[in-house]
Length: 347
Image (tube, rainbow, N blue to C red; front, side, top):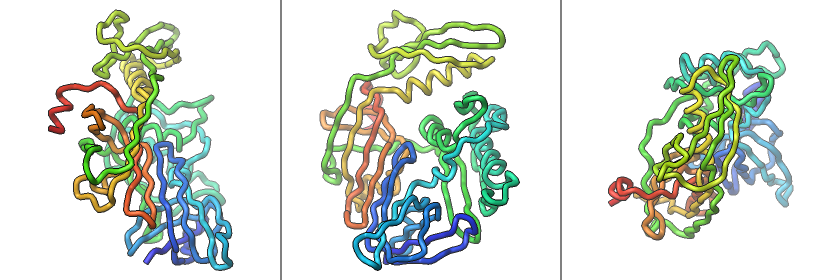
């Protein structure tokens, strides 16, 4: 049986449990995925939490964006956004020193508690939130801010891609438990020639960021540094490096007293702007080789495509449906460089 729990965002009380005729779940790397469920008419309002279950297994939880009549007096089509949208708000950047001294996860936890749970505003504070930090990933990169204003959701999207730091959300016992941790997992190995995979599609352009000019401010000093992407995926400061690849150039401003912080940010920018090469395919949800539980946004992947090339990538979109026995998967930002080391892994 398919059901949807509706939980009031203000009181955190369950408003009802309603049968679901069908659902479609969509998640993407930017946390902009839009999921839908056709439900029996009930007490559903924008901003409420929604938990979709299929045979008592939770398949998705998110935040209701809209509910409209689905063509019958007793059915509504509910549109649901991803949970990270709970933090899609511009807030003041504080305690950012925690990132370098303790960890990214601790900074996120501190921010959630101070800004969203215990800010002192009884109309907006979500007292039911409980945050647990399982790992501590030290970084020299602070959130991008404008006059010390930043968007926490945007930061969560960024660190999921750059540092594999994830937030998991669990509803129960009168609380919303948020677990923050870095996932140290080996890439999922995918061979797109397998019979479990269908509707394979590959597309790419040559729009690659291969050179980054950095205006580096440290103290009262300004220096200009240049970095180049080479075929190994590493960064070189040698413009004549024989492994240097061709591509676009960009210029950024970085303010930090640490040269290591400059290297870290440059690495993130070049990785995030790698070749726009995407692979899409469907996977049977009963596959024993590529298990459905491993196909989630931000998961690292090592994939062999149609002509036996091998790439490292990241899952950027996943879509499932109650009416389908397949999972749609999109991989993006693939590095085109093939190495014998990677070939041996899949052989």
